[in-house]
Image 1: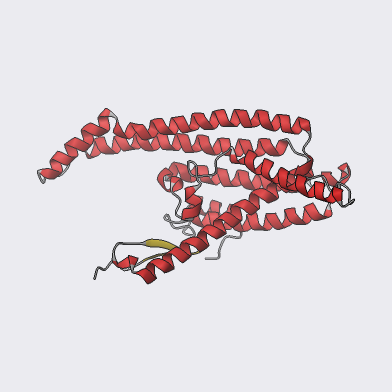
Image 2: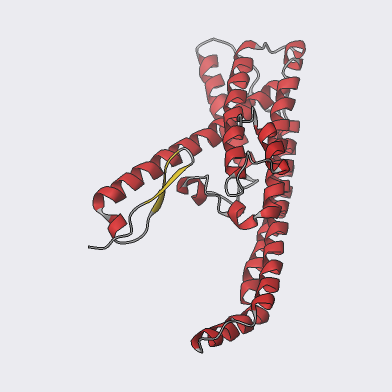
Length: 304
């Protein structure tokens, strides 16, 4: 069977269940396709940023490209939502991400308020470049994020405040779901099943356990879907504040950050795995490490 040509084709194939996407790997494979497409979009954005002039007519040519990239992000979250419903636990601790990326995740993805840190960081960097060019008598150059207007900054500040409040609400809801693991029902069930285990009896509480855990999973699905909705809304709202050329620069910064963090994390994990093998960590405990793009190996579990 031939490989799907894109993340969209793969998603359709996986949802049809036609055998092209084994149950254990569909979103991981989709993510590979999606990141390859993001890399292609990055190249298109860089080309556009370097060739389009500052006048309004030229900037208008960028709108279709910006919209195409936004649709690509929408496609990602649409696909992710389907798999969150299928296996929310895997989406909260994605095996296709490196441990470096995991350390900076918020509910299975990037923290929405990071969009503003990215905007202000890139704006500051480009502002410094503008000032350096001015001191050399080179003019102000192209309109980029270094030229954010007072009105844009005011709107960004207002949007950031709203996002902070909603992000906090999502975090508080997640805390409630997590704390529910120690509610009266779970404490009673864990005690009853533990007593059965000690007596060597088969559990008679399986249905109650499954029912209780189903409720916990549904709570997690609710929180992750809310978090992803906030991520996408924030991303699109920031872009709406910007001119077409500024949006291109923002999308470039977002793609570069995402792709390089993934690349650096993968390299770091691969090095850690090699060092662990050399130092004999694999003889002390089972170590599962990512050793390449979406590859996984389990070292021998032997003790001298």
